[in-house]
Length: 187
Length: 187
DNA sequence: CACACCTACTCAACAATTTGACTATGGAGA
DNA sequence: TCTCCATAGTCAAATTGTTGAGTAGGTGTG
Image 1 (cartoon, rainbow over the protein chains, first blue to last red):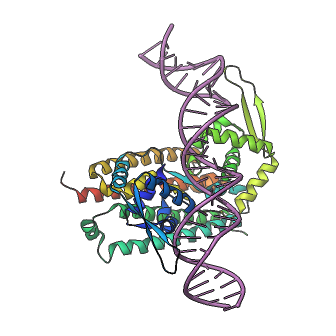
Image 2: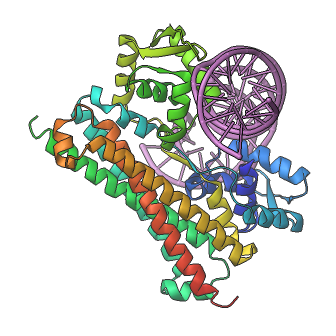
Image 3: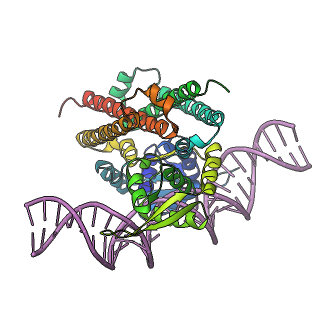
C-alpha cells in the first residue's frame, strides 16, 4: 500500500523511468522503503492506470526505448493527502543481523566479532555516501542558509534521519566490539 | 526465511507457546523482526515438522490447553550455524512516516509538526520501556558486572541496539521540530 | 448482569514481496 | 573477438505477510 506513495514521492524529484527509479530505490529511497525493480514496474503500471502518473515514451538511438513517468495533478494531490495523515503502522525494522546477535552465545566469539566488524564498515560506508548527498544539497551554503532558501526541505530531513541512524549504528557497533574485546581478552 | 531463525532465537529464552511468542514478537522481538500471530503459528508448525522444535501439550483447568515448544538439539545447532554466517541481506527499514516527510512540502507545516510530535512521544515511550527491560537485565549490578557474570550477552547487545535506535530517533525528531519552528515562526 | 477484554488458538483469502529466468542492444576491457 | 556489464524492461512462480472471522471459556468493570 505504501509503495504507491513511495513511488509518487520519488517522482517529486522529476520525471523518471522505471529503470531509473529502480536505481534510486536501491540507494537513497532504499533507506526507508526498499523495492525491487519488479515491484516498481508493476506499481508504475497501476499508478498510470489510475491516472496518478503519466507515461511518455522516449525513443532512443542506441538504447532500448524507455517510458518516462511524471506526476499528474491528481497524483500530487493524493500524495499530499497521504502525507498529511498520521502513519497507519509504526516503522518496521527487519534485520537478520540482530537475530544473529541475539543467538550469538552459541557461536565462536571471534566469528561474532568479525560480523560486527563487517557491519561497522558497511555503516561507515553508507554514512560517507549520505554525507556526500548532503554536500550536494548544501552546495557550500550553511545548513541555516539552505533551510531558508530551499523550497523543499522534506528530502533534507529524511536525509538527516538516515545520517542519524547510521551514526548511531556505528557507535553501537563500536561499543559492542569493546564489550566483546573485554569479555575475551584471551584467544 | 529469517522468521524461522527469529522464532528459534526467541525459544532460546525457554519453552513458550505460540500465544506467548506472539506477545514477545509484539514488544521486544518486534524491534528487529516483526511477525503477526498467524505467521508464528504457521512457522511453529513447520519447525515442529522439521524437528527443530518439540511440542508438548499442557492441559489447563480454566484456560484453553496450550502447546509449549522447546528447541531440540538439532534446532539449537541450526540456529548457531545461522548465527555464524554473515547476513545474506542488509537491514531493511520500512517506514511510512519517512515517505510522508519526504513529501511534506505539499502539506500544511502545522500538520507535519504534529506528525513529528506524535512520533517523538512514541519514541520516548519505547525508550522508557527499553530502559525498564535493561534494569531487569542488570538487577542492580553495573553493566560491567553484568557482562562479566551473564552467560548470554546477545540479548543485551540487541537491547543496546534498540536503545541506540530510539535515542537517535528522539534526537532527530527534536532537531526536525526545531527546524520547522525556525522556518515558520508566523502562523 | 451485560459487555468488553484476555487466553489460546484455527482457517481462509488475499496482498505484497522475492526469486529466477528471459529478451535485446550497445559499449568497454582482456 | 569474447565476455561481461549497463540499459530497459517482461513474465511466471513461490514465498511471505496481512486481514478478518470464528471458537470457546474465563475474568474484570460499571
